[in-house]
Length: 550
Image 1: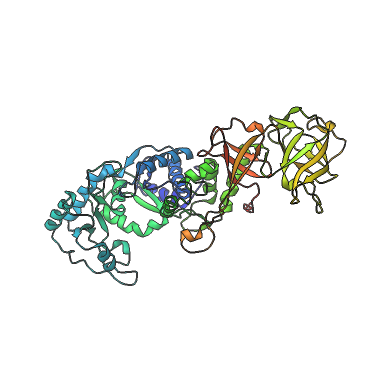
Image 2: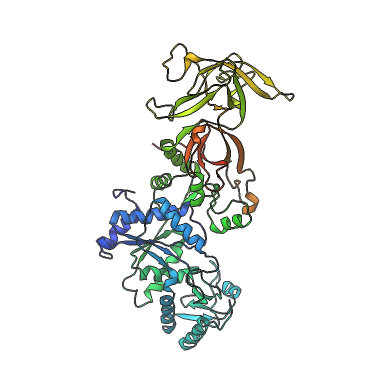
């Protein structure tokens, strides 16, 4: 996002600066993921927005891990999140952990207890849920709601000291059980968890809830604008309540602003469901190329530039909407077209024997990397008597307007020569096994030959010098419709085929991207590629049904 681009978040920050709420040179935001899974495409939007604010106002954006739930969090996720942010090209100014503020949060809870604004509740989780009411039914006060501050302070201290088992007691804010906002009906602020924390070990056995911890974290770090997705709008009154009732923060606190989250058609982003798919071995880890985690997109060959351009062009709004996944793929394809070398790969091969080409000769042709650019750099491609072409590029009895290879027809082999089909062999089942052709040595690409033209051009790979490859083509992981996630899994979401690639591919590194002529954009898989075997993941097909608005 350039500084000249406007959106409602910028407008609100500008108003705050004009009204003297915050200083223009002290705008601070933060990206606060919980380390309980990998980042996904929706997080990329949140990152982009926060760092766009940093760019526009020459401000500060911190990375903070909201690690308040040790049951679900892990160092693996912390490291993956940092790697993903760096991969997108963002640099945070400072790194923080919510767990480093636990002492301060505990003191804040004590302050609320002493003010009569928090109490220890002995009800079970089910009782608390039941007595909380519903959108049409007011809540019921806990029988422990009127404990004295002294009683609550004693019980909360004993909770911290490990005297009670998990679930025995919680600390709740004392707000309004009749509130139309369910989040304000005496929300739980602390629970007992006798679980080691991945970052600080066994120091604590009580842990703050997100809605209590988050505003305190923002305030400690002097964040000016707490930018978050739209589902937190109903939580904003609680965010403000926490800070308004803490003496240290009530007069100088952050402002929460919500934006519409990013949702794509038929794309799964829920970490809870992704975790389920990983645990059930339905996908190949959090970075499975069928997932829209950043790790999955990276492994699929999507570029950071495409992700950021997509987010930039779709804009920042308040109202939620679902964006056609084809629109995202358009930006991916557009970026890859500018940066991917084109190579020839055959995945459903039929052998072609050029009968008038010398049997033991191999010719190394200079084939342009970009066939549409006469000034393009070239690569060496071996040409031999025996070649592979795609099975679909030959027909015994072609339909009208079929311009590829069939008996008697002349076509161009891409970057090579004109060849004319002279015959073919079939097996006992009627399948084409070998195609025979002759070539015209005067028609070599780049020779300036203008004697005649042909309508068809097909790609090929030498049968004598090539690189065997495994190719993974992907479809939607989920079938359309409603129902349980596991019932909607598309069992045909990955198609594995083998093929042959031209030898210019040799030496390609994991993560290198290519355009396979007439097939799509592919990337060398980072997990399953070995020195003995190249594995490619399809990023996107060559053609798109999506048309951008001009």
